[in-house]
Length: 304
Image (cartoon, rainbow, N blue to C red):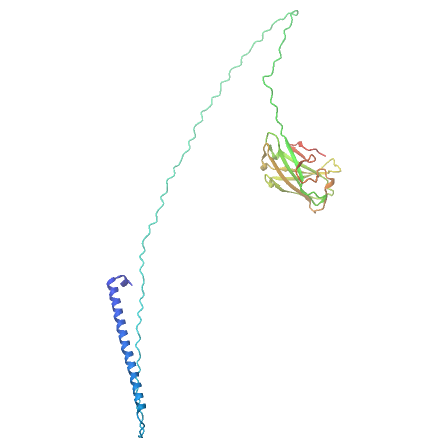
């Protein structure tokens, strides 16, 4: 289809096409006129024959006039197929020029060596002996005053608050919940803190402990079951709750909440009403029948 883009060739081809189309149209028009004239002549002959009076004549075979059949010539159909030629214009892709990054080399400043002071030799004092007559009045000696008063050691103050997550008298599981409050002025390492909940087991069956939530990570809480050597009617066993090193510290004025649970493996029931640490309170309060220890020393509560 390069001729389509050539103006001279395109005009020539279009002119030829128009001429051929004109010739075909003219020939078709002439043939159609011939056919129409032939039809008119045949019609007039038939009219004249009908108006002539009847004559007694010897019949003759009628003349058969053959009407020529004109077969129209097929009009040539010219199909022009235009194939556009697309010229690709190369597109330049910008190349990113890497920006040089300045490399900083850290040169440590040498620390000047500190010279240790040369020890000064101690001076030896020779005591002077003064002879005092027995009859002389002894001199009063003043008692030296301490230069400074030693500062008082601030002890950690920690409070344990408790509420019950399951207040049913008979239950297949026990849910004690605690809130540890550091009301002192020093941070407390939680791995040094232990909480004890006292109860009666009723039956000698294996138990399981779990932690539902802890504000410093439930995976940092563990529990141990310990039987009391001096068993009481309200406590023959206690659950000791501890914290791992990952629990971190409880800063001054900070608090942490921990919710735990335990049950017998066969889910048999406990009688909570005869448990030393049991309370039906569903809100936190300072309950002295649960105990808290810091570094092995009792810091809150009263043992049974």
